[in-house]
Length: 387
Image (cartoon, rainbow, N blue to C red; front, side, top):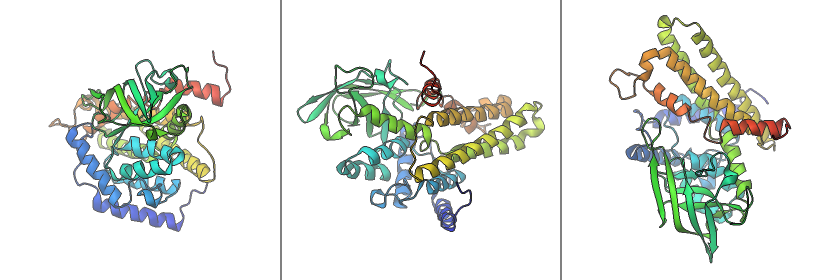
């Protein structure tokens, strides 16, 4: 891995920085877990698409720029440096998009990827079920063939962005006699289809960031299946690799948080009596940089033909626990002021730390709980026996 940027990469960084300087909204958007904020973020996604910045690694014919992963990391660094809005369609562009590129037919790519890049169609993820959270092999919801369609019955829960999204990608049991990871299929479902009921679930901050989805004889055409029937587990594991290993949580997100944490510490250091807080700030900064270097190494390996495997579980544990530690440190710096909500009159510019802290608590749970990730590491990377 060469740590020096090429002239072309330096020029690309300059182009990204200039565009963001001209286009990032002057005032923060409302939370995309509100109806109004969701639409504000949808419009931002459309603005990105107009500049072909929606997903820079995608081919130009799908609204991208054909960039490699190093260029994507550069884009992400500039994106977070500019403090641009968070990506409301992250389930689509970071998870389903790469999965469609690998497993989708030409017709499916043409149908879904362009609308995903443009912000016209927003996506939710529908994997977890009651009794089948991180253990997706326990999925019971069924999609049974009936002519040229599947008839879907069952329930999904903890479906991110499903309250306001247009589509959801799910795994269903298409072979009702199958067990565990056999007989599952990956199916794309419009959330306005007859027979679907979406019920919001409030997050810690009270906003409906999640939902449960009920399917009551929902008919979906066979062409909405991604890959072969029964291939759902294999495809889902590829999607989980994108989620845990590289795309969903770029290192720039944590580097920016670490920089803000340093700024916060410097602004309050005269009031801090606990000397261990300074150590925690320094460690957070170093860990964020270490994660960035490791991700650059992973990107270089993938560019040279490598694959993301079980080591993605190491990534997932590292970034989720790093996010928690950084926000816990911020709470310690702010002391009693840490409890102020962003809209509190006395919050000033510190209120978003509480939002970040609350969201960080979900990191060890989504994308597969960290307990499950440690099992994967033990069994697949260390070769330890299953007890």
